[in-house]
Image (cartoon, rainbow, N blue to C red; front, side, top):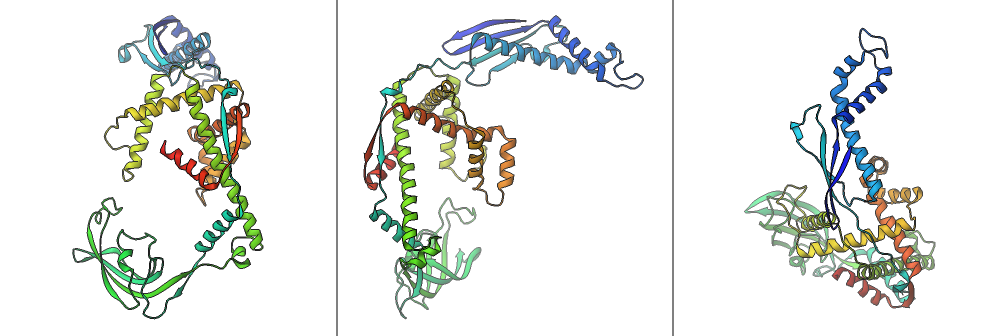
Amino acid sequence: MQVTETLNEGLKRGYTITVTAAELEAKVQEKLVEAQPEIEMKGFRKGKVPMAILRKQFGPRLLGDAMQDAIDGAMKDHFEATGDRPALQPAVQMQGGHEWAEGRDVVVEMTYDCLPPIPELDATKITLDRLVVKADDASVDEALKNLAATAQSFDDRKKGAKAKDGDQITIDFKGSVDGDYFEGGTAEDYPLVLGSNSFIPGFEAQLVGAKVGDELKVDVTFPAEYGAAHLAGKAAVFECTVKAVKEPKAAELDDELAKKYGAEDLAGLKTQIAERLGVEYQGASRAILKRSLLDQLDGLVKFDLPAALVEAEANQIAHQLWHEENPDVQGHNHDAIEPTDEHKSLAERRVRLGLLLAEIGRKAEITVTDAEMTQAVLNAARQYPGQERQFFEFVQKNPQMQQQLRAPLFEDKVVDHIVAQATVTEKEVGKDDLQKAIDALDEI
């Protein structure tokens, strides 16, 4: 067997692997001898089938197995000898293809981008601010009022009162397009909170000022991207009858409200809210610190990037963003999506940081434990109420899904490892400053 280098430019590598006909024959013979004791065939005792018959019966299949074993073995030996680590699965192509015939040498061409050498990181050069926000009384009171607002009730307004924005009105309605009533456009005693934007744009605004007993027509146009294709972009008329007008009444801030949310009393509810806010603030602060760290890493460490890896990442980014802008298109039945320069630049950053964090984690022997993976699967399974067991079993059988869950856990542990070596200064700020910093992350 012979491996010959054909390409060595930057991170690109190319080799031909030659497996001689004699080597293939030897491997086929080896497999026949290994299998012979267990083979049963009519007219022969178990293990006594002549080799010539075995070769005729199983030779073609064993030849394919031998060919694959030889190539896999040559690739394994090559990577162990050179120390190369392919960025993606190597591309392997057999010379001659379908024209190859038994008795000839097998020659395959192998090409790949190898992972680059990654410089050592001096984490002590990194300086970070950890934003600290306290859940003060004002924040707790604000959150408590918002909680009470969600638990609000509605009381009838005075007879003849006009509906205001925020009121709940009860209506019967029938919708028509071009004079024909359409399916799903009719309801009775429907409670609608004006200003909730739960109906077609423009619908609720036309009911502001209505009184009990009013019968009115609401003219709207369905959005062009509306889910029902036969209604999308169409002008419609809704005949509405107002049956009740109610004003919102916020829930009282008392022990009864607290009990609705699992607390013993109002003081206990405030404690729960303070704890929840503290967790939210810490999560936001960590996100800001992590972005700052990644930005510094992106500037501190430079190295060549595997072109194939960057191209694959850019294509994935372009495809994902396209689907976000075109949510109605399912699957991949659409024209090819060409990555822009912006997509490529983002791909380079992601690939660079991904390789750097992976290398730091490898050298530091950072791993994701079975317990951490189990917890991650359980957390993800909560998104599928009633199907948790099926989801758990799906993950167990799906290595790709396991990797999707493991990757962020690994990344966070590597980030913690780097932060532990960096200079971190705690900086106390208000919640508004924290929110501005979070909003700035989305603008980048």
